[in-house]
Image (cartoon, rainbow, N blue to C red):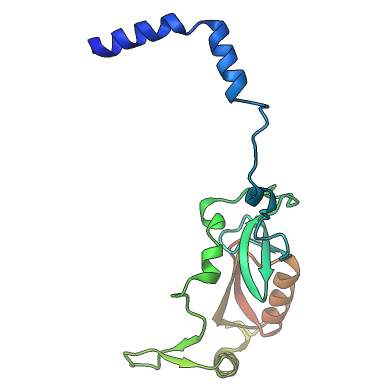
Length: 194
């Protein structure tokens, strides 16, 4: 400790307000920093990318994102300054959403595990959509009730439910709700309570 005290004591004799001011003025602030030729030619990697506005896929807040695409690939995702919700800010999960697209371990195919099977198999998307439609129709037909115990008309099924995602917009939720109500579904919910 004595060594540090001695060093700082001697140093303080040389540091006057005038010398500190000169040092700061020469090294900090509006001093013109010379740029190399290479630095002058540098451009951001998104300078010639196409920008698409999107919504963060995580929670129900709906923060705006700018997705930059170049040669058919996403090259960057950042907060959208024009978003009235987030004003360009993203939470840690939203800031890392670029990893959703580029992650090599991300599942990009339909996975199906048959009843009592132990392994998952890959199926085409068309097969999965057809199977979902068939199961939905079969369940509705098997559980649809036209009247309740008192004979009053109810025309519904409680065997099928829907839980909407937080990033669905009002238009999508409106169509989903209309469609499911037309099937007689009662159990319709959304994380964002739209």
